[in-house]
Image: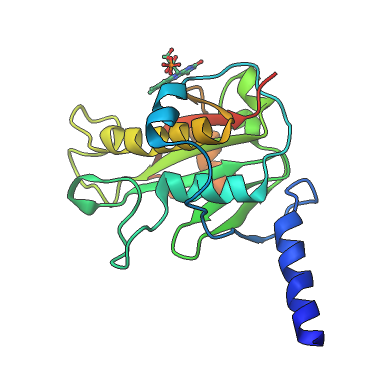
Length: 212
Ligand SMILES: Cc1cc2nc3c(=O)[nH]c(=O)nc-3n(C[C@H](O)[C@H](O)[C@H](O)COP(=O)(O)O)c2cc1C
């Protein structure tokens, strides 16, 4: 009986966890839920780029679902929700909250703290910084090789990132959360803040949040 109570208490803690309570080193995301929200056709009908973002908290379940929708593992062979040319899987996802910047560890389905504090200003322009969450999609050009590094005319990463961003757009439409793909990040500051190797290049940003 004691064990049942402690298990229930643990589940209650996980379900009510708030990102506003500081910056934990690792955030264990919840398993994705597949049976909530609208149909794919309804989500497509509602997909749009939003404005007027607020800092209203997004639930851990929505954050968990969104990360998985963006770039989660959806098959036993380790392949992902978004396709990549030649299965290079070079796009990495970083999530910037007021409390810290996190790396999405898709293998463990966790968010790992990379830089404590509010670094949203390096991800985009002023209105983006007011949003609860800013995402950066960062290509590891070591995985794509010459001719496909971001900035090259023929790069595959700019194609691959479109699928990831659209997955976020569709999940947000499904959940009634606003989002907008965007530019405006500071590549050098991103590299410094996240401690990235120079071959990691931001290919797109996306602002996410409830809107006014
Ligand atoms: C690659 C890409 C970059 C974008 N960059 C910005 C941006 O820097 N700032 C912005 O306000 N919107 C940006 N957007 C959003 C577009 O303005 C928006 O998609 C377009 O106006 C069409 O609106 P819709 O998404 O609601 O259909 C971007 C969209 C894409 C796909």
